[in-house]
Length: 159
Image (cartoon, rainbow, N blue to C red; front, side, top):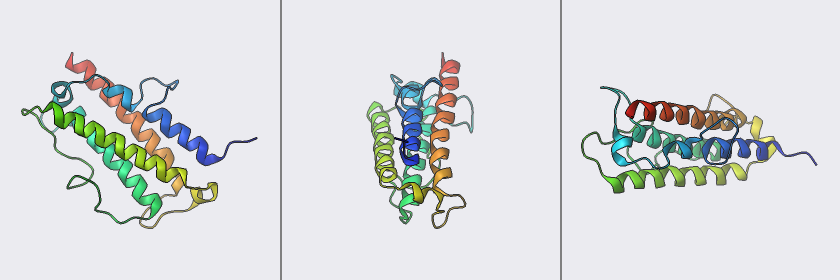
């Protein structure tokens, strides 16, 4: 029996985020064991740190859910959009853990929204979007893998 396309896309999203994959470290794996100090380390002025990348990824998971469900903007738990300034000097272990939980919550919420889609929904372009749902879902998986690689490089530079 052939797999539904939504199921295949959900598998890609899972591999990019937290399931074993052939391509190497996924997003969740890239931050496993990182301390707040490591997550806040910055390569240079005006460069994003790992912590900011994590919150950025959480935001885009929220945006994907919002787009595919046709929800209005404004319900992300943090004020702002896309990139969120995180600590440089003031390291707070609990805030780091809280932002990891935010990433996890946004991922689970997004997966739940994807799960209700039908294959026919994949070719639909949500209101306010320039691409169809299929592109949005493949894009969020690629987004996770891209940032997982970026985090892996930053970690090498820290040490």
